[in-house]
Length: 100
Image 1 (cartoon, rainbow, N blue to C red):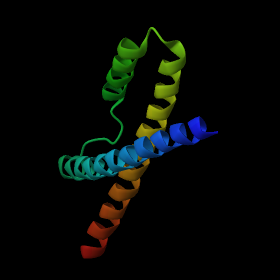
Image 2: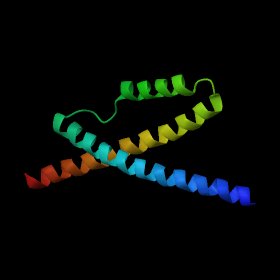
Image 3: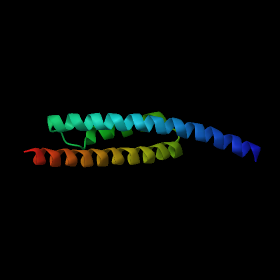
Image 4: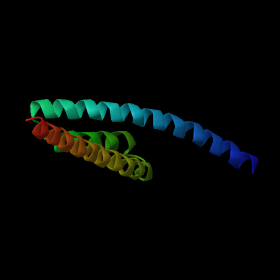
């Protein structure tokens, strides 16, 4: 039981680091959203996403289970990033219309 608690404590430490990284990622997603708004660029960038998944496959290709695990998490992160961008762009467009 002591070993289990020790491992869980290590996981908690990693989770705290992941949360901080996700906060930083969110801030960068917001920056990208503003750039896409200003440049009138599409939210979805399929080539970029394909490149990211190709890199995951290259790095973790030998361990299929780990590769699937990471790809699934990354798919979720990317989907959430797109959703954030869509909501933010929608809000920016509404504000622009209100100002006019």
